[in-house]
Length: 119
Image (cartoon, rainbow, N blue to C red; front, side, top):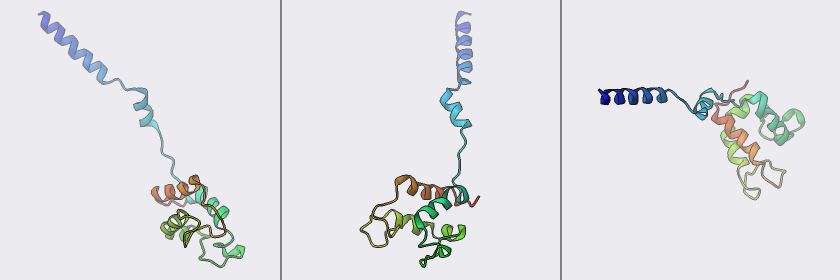
């Protein structure tokens, strides 16, 4: 009888603790992933770093990258070129002597990874 009572208490204890979640697990389940979108994130980075050269309305004569579709269709090349060193052929932004900061480069990468959403 004593063995049965101990066994029952042990099973009950395991069952109770198996339903306990740590706060980290609970927080991870409720965390929402914020997607990067063109209109809210990428468009301003393009204007700040690629104008006027890639914006015909601003007097640029390079490949137009002034619309969502143009940036979406060229995102692989944009990422490749902004990751180059300033001394490498094809480095962008062309008129700068230093690479874009890592946060800006990561913004383009995240936008691609998130599916290149417009809005």
